[in-house]
Image (cartoon, rainbow, N blue to C red; front, side, top):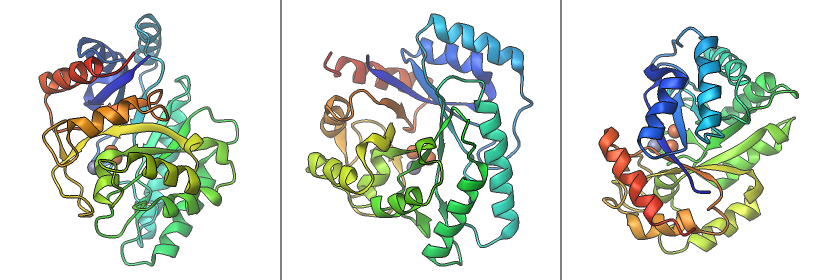
Length: 277
Ligand code: FE
Ligand code: FE
Ligand code: ZN
């Protein structure tokens, strides 16, 4: 089954988001755990969760992806930013335990005025602090474009973090097509090579989700600007190859393209029409 969805507003609540994605033709969705630019979360509404779980079962929504806020930075030079990140991670992960096999996506972090190695040390520290051996949620480190001091622009950086996590079975990776293309992985002309490299360095068994985006920026620009499917430098041909690739086709795909709901609906339909059953 083709698992396709998009990013939805965090104001909808769980049931609201599930209904929205069904109306858009999808069967999974991503949402922000809290205000993406701030950090305030809505109060946890257990009724909404229970209503969602019932609705999700009826409508074949088997997995959702929660995205950490952009303000989350485990690798910051500022102690208060790192403490805030740990607090957010703990609260988000606690909430996600209500959902079966949930995924939690986070940007590894930006090392700001520190060194790359120090940044990685802090990310490893935060993850080892918040991951509980009994948790059901898998935390995904997102592949990044590499703007500024962003960590996670190379498969090696992500592999280094994972290698130092105590409960590795709780860690996976979310590959963002826009980001990896900007970071210099040529998924347009050499998709197999990129996937082989991913497998060699991280292991494809760690890959749990795809952010399916086109890009406004040229190859290896280290810039992060998403574009609508088929309107960017990656193009629909390459993106269709990605959703059908034998090593990727069973993963959940999440659109983070600059779209309103009608635009998402069109893209979901387009991708469903081009997914080979
Ligand atoms: Fe992201
Ligand atoms: Fe992304
Ligand atoms: Zn991005």
